[in-house]
Length: 457
Image 1 (cartoon, rainbow, N blue to C red):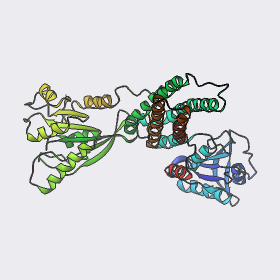
Image 2 (image 1 turned 90 degrees about the horizontal axis):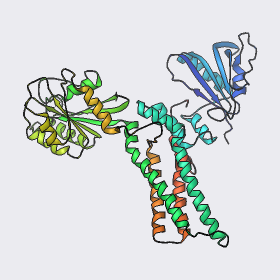
Image 3 (image 1 turned 60 degrees about the vertical axis):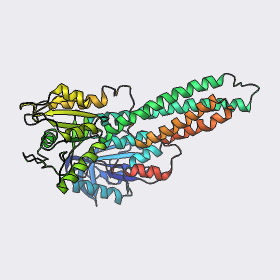
Image 4 (image 1 turned 135 degrees about the horizontal axis):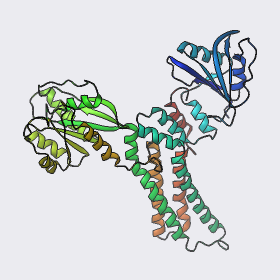
């Protein structure tokens, strides 16, 4: 039972046009009523739900700020509790002063994510929807934003509830038949059960496979730029970032270490890593840079291999080409404004990759690179009208465990095991799916999840 009333800034603690102080709990209205008054100091009735009232915040019998007050009575509020939100002027000092007034009148400062935690504990949202709130706030690109909104609206939980409902229905039928075999028969049920479980497995495996896209949507595509020294890698980084982040000179080997930048490209996030040029060298520092470049490439979601089209390929190029054979790679034929000695078709045949002629100096071909990156990873497979993408690692682990349990059900059916064997793995799958919704999860896990939320949400 949650019996205390909490308060916090619901907007950032920075100067702004307005600030919002949120108060939630059984005493929210009575606490706010103590210090919300008219200009003349008379009481303002803020008890009516979903109405906005005009008044002043009073501190020590003196007006502190002119405000608007919105009341949302339980259960029709975000937390499922009585909630009062005070819109005040957005000075940092003013917001903190009003927050202090709320505390002095009986509210407690909220912990990070405690409003959303209360929404979960009060049954307003399940745990997957609560986690989507956190993802929504931290979204850094259009795809992540759309995925979070869709999950907040129940795209994940609706599927999970449907799976669990089917599993529970089949389990209940088995239990009922075992308890009352004279009236309920299991003849032919194994075939029906196999069909039901196979259908759920198919959907689970799709959701699990979507998590790779989901990870890239949420965290961004880790993109490593490699190539020989002076091929134009740093110039490319500067173009993509939109500023002179990397030092560009005509001296080969200028870049000695990795340089990492984050960009938003056509609605998706990329973490761009510029690396030292790949070549044989006796310079100890440069040699370390080359090894770091190769290690970065091995851990990349995408490799952009920059080739200087004005000079022939050499052993360093062949070393890189052998390294990228089984990797997501785009090859850029740079310096296309100069006399070219490398033929695009021959490089495509040699690398088995898409080759795009560009000029980093003249900003030519960059639009084709951007289009290739987006099409390579998403290929129009993500449709936020009807498709669900798993972006949460915890959800992925639960789905994998549930999938494994249901495969055990299929194995038991194929081995013609007694029906009561099925129920063990079916209920294991049921429980794993329930963890996604927040059923039977530990208090420690709940606290850990909501501790990552920002204050006031």
